[in-house]
Amino acid sequence: QVQLVESGGGLVQAGNSLSLSCVASGGSLSEHTVAWFRQAPGKEREFVVGVNGSSGSTFFADGVKGRFTVSRDNAKSTVYLHMSYLRSEDAAVYYCAARSGWPIYSTAEEYDFWGQGTQVSVSS
Image (cartoon, rainbow, N blue to C red; front, side):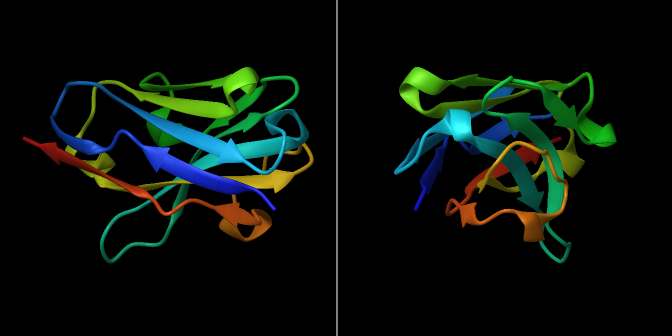
């Protein structure tokens, strides 16, 4: 059973950057795919990026390509989401999710483990 804890959310001005962390316990990141999702009020949860815990390969949603990056530190069991050039539409609760195995899926139903979420607010 993998437990995930996100941190790093907050209020940031549009155009600025923010980094989120997802710390995993109870399992090895190298055996899991980890993804970031986000959910804005009144909207469905949407995929942001996934990272293969073994190879480090990534898959980004179109709306964040070129602005967001993801990295992982398996020794620290931590995945980081680095967000740059933030826009008002990036404001949401950001969730870290994990699934055993390595295909990166962009649908929330494929992920078995979820964190509690961290709020990202963007001011214009």
